[in-house]
Image (cartoon, rainbow, N blue to C red; front, side):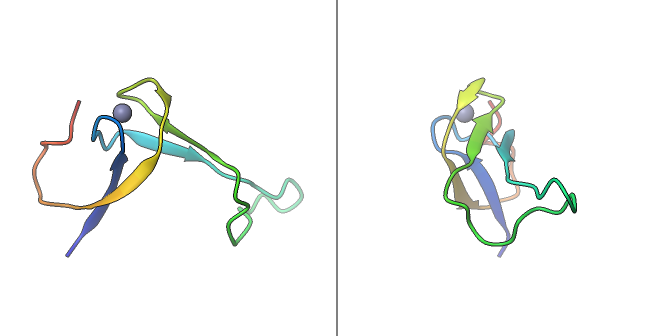
Length: 62
Ligand SMILES: [Zn+2]
């Protein structure tokens, strides 16, 4: 079973997440800093990304 991450608001899979990167190593910090921004390109706004089962269709496209 495959999972995709989608926008909680509109169901689009066109979502992105800003994450914390160590500026000295360029590597993302492992572990959850608890503060990050999730963005939906469908809503063009901040959103919450949720995990859904990928049913192999494009029904989640905006
Ligand atoms: Zn959205």
